[in-house]
Length: 67
Image 1 (spheres, rainbow, N blue to C red):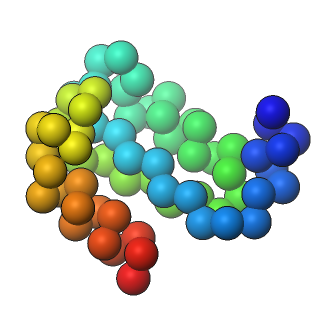
Image 2: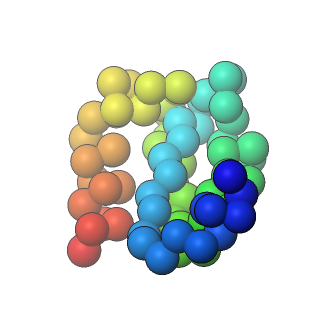
């Protein structure tokens, strides 16, 4: 799977919650490094479901990525 990911030629956004204990930001950032055109963002004060904890923060993060 890693070889397939390494050949992806599309932008990828990975979002983590700052307070996520299931997949903390540091290991999540390691996943982002597998994608050649990735961006990684951390939503402050959010847990494992940042879109529920901070919907506005997630929307803003996605909007910046799409700009």
